[in-house]
Length: 471
View 1 (cartoon, rainbow, N blue to C red):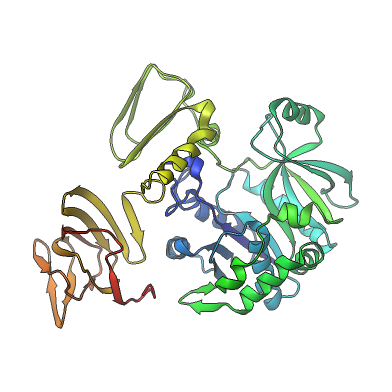
View 2 (view 1 turned 120 degrees about the vertical axis):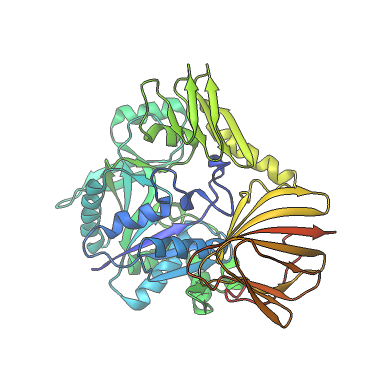
C-alpha cells in the first residue's frame, strides 16, 4: 500500500490577525521557521521514505502562492485541486480520495492540515507507520495528541480497547470542546487525547464509508471531479456541483459514524498554531518568559509575545500581552483573550475595510505590489516583477500611470509601441491606453508607480490578455 500525503490548505486564520489575512493566511506565512507552515508540513512528510508526491486541496485565490512555495522547496505535487467554495474537510478529503483511487486503487491517504506544527518528526513518522498497519486492516485512523494541559480549545477523543499487533486503540467516543473543569477531568483520566484533525486511511475505504454515511457528499464530489478542467498546473473542480455539496467535517461525516475508527496516541510536539498564545507556548522563551521577533526592545516585560514586522517596537513595564506590528496594523491584547482577536476581523468586515483581507504588500503570480502613499486623486505603489514574468495586457478607464524604474529592466507595451527602459528612466501610461509591463531580464524588476485619476481601485483593470488566465 502506497502512502500519499493530502494537504488541506483552507481557512484564513483570523485569530492570528494582523499577520494572517484572507489573501495571505497563516499556512502561507513563516511563523515558526524561515519557511511557511505549508512548506514545513510538506517537507516533514517528504522526509519519510517511500512517500508519494503531495496532493493539495486549496482555495482558488491561493493557487499561485501555493504553487510558488512548493517550487521554492523543490516539490512537484501530484495535483493542486481548487475548491470554488469552502465545504469543510469531508468533501475536500473525498475529492482527494477519488483522484487517488482512480490512479492507484490501493492508495493510502495521509490527510494533514497545512498549518500545524510538529516538533518530534521521528515520533510522527513512527506513528504514521503504526497507522499504516491499521489502514491495511481496513481501519480509519486519527492521530490523538497526548495532552499536557486541560485545553478547552480542542475537541477530545476517548480511547477504547487495545488492538492486537498495533499501537492504535479503538475510538470509544469523540467529545466536543469541553469547559475547563471537564478538560481537567479528561487530563486526570489519562484516556483522552486532543483531536488533531489528522487522519490516515485508504482512499477506497474512506469512499466506501462516505458512501454509506453521507452518500450526498460523495455524489456531489464525484460530479465536481468529473466536471473538472485543467487550468495551467491546477485542476478546477466544477463550480455548480461542488457548491451544491453539503458542508461537513471528516469527524461528523465519517469518523463518528463508522465502526472502523481507531486512534493513534501521539506524543509528537504538536500544535495547531491556532492563536498568538499557542505560538507563544511553542516558541523558545527568554528568562522573563517573553518571545520577541523582529526589531523589539523590552524593559520590565514578562510572559509576553512581541512581534515587529516593519519598524522598531519598544515595550516597557507590562506582562502577559500580545503585541503584533505590521506595516498597516498593530494588535495589542491580553494574552488570556487571544480568542477574541477574531472580533477585530469581524469588525473590519462590518466596516467595509480591507485590513482583514489584504496586507499592504499584495502578491500576484508575476510578483507583488505595495502601497506607500495615498491621497485625493493619487496613490503611489512599489512594484516588483519577477524575472521573465509579465502583467496582463490591460487598460484603465479612470486613471493614468507614471512608472519609474528603480532597478532591473522593464519592457513596456503602450498601444502598438514597445520600448525598453532601465534604471532611473521613466514612462507614462495615459488614461485609456492599452499597455503591458514585462521583466525581460534575469534579476527582479523594481519600480515606483504613481497613479492619478478620479478612481484608483484595483477593479478598474480591464484585462485583454493574461498569461495566468485571469481575463
